[in-house]
Amino acid sequence: MAWFKKQTETPIETGVTMTVLEQPRSHSVKAETEEYLKEYTELATKAGANVPQLLNECFKRFLNEYDIPVFNLQEVVKYMDSKAKEGKDRS
Image 1: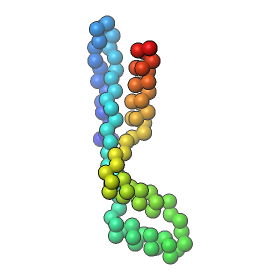
Image 2 (image 1 turned 180 degrees about the vertical axis):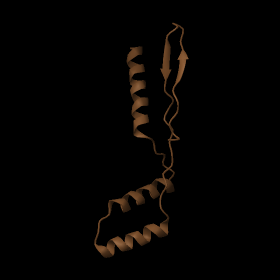
Image 3 (image 1 turned 90 degrees about the vertical axis):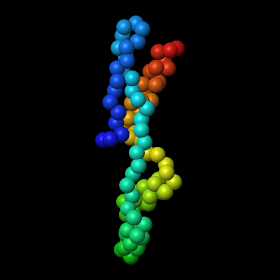
Image 4 (image 1 turned 60 degrees about the horizontal axis):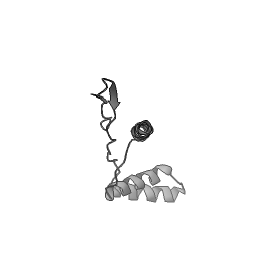
């Protein structure tokens, strides 16, 4: 997965090595074409089906259209945990 960054180790004054996590990077999601979504919607409507994948594809299209960044949840949680621990250590 391309958005993962390797951890780097940085020595500090006490001689202790501390692991530093880099800020998570955003990535874009691939959405289907407008023509594809239109056809898919028509078929789902004719069949009387409520298809969750259609909503998912429309949402991806919205994210791309408005250039909204998307992050990997596991990386964000790991980063925020390290920042919270860092804050506690300073207190």
